[in-house]
Image (cartoon, rainbow, N blue to C red; front, side, top):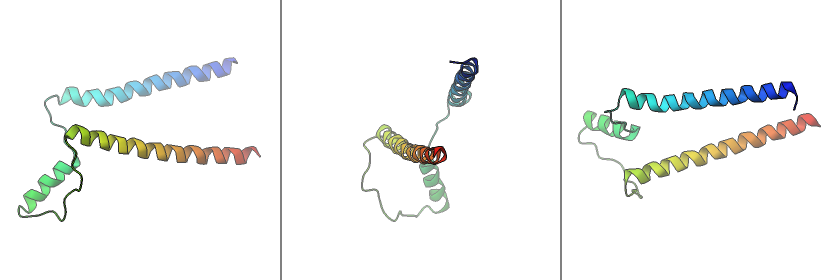
Length: 105
């Protein structure tokens, strides 16, 4: 490994540590500042707004599957987000690799 490669690897490690600390700060700071707050989702806010505007409103349909608890609902939502991120990441990775392969020819 050359000196240039070692410096480059060291700077990327520093950048990764800084980004990790930034992510942790983004997660922890709101919890400390608003420790007694209830963090709800957009669905609950929308339902409250609709009920306030029109108390007689009846939904068009109901869900065909209702999770047993909020934790399971969160797990399903997080799994869906992870799957979507994986698909997008795979697509970006394969597209980037194809472009690199074309440039090398």
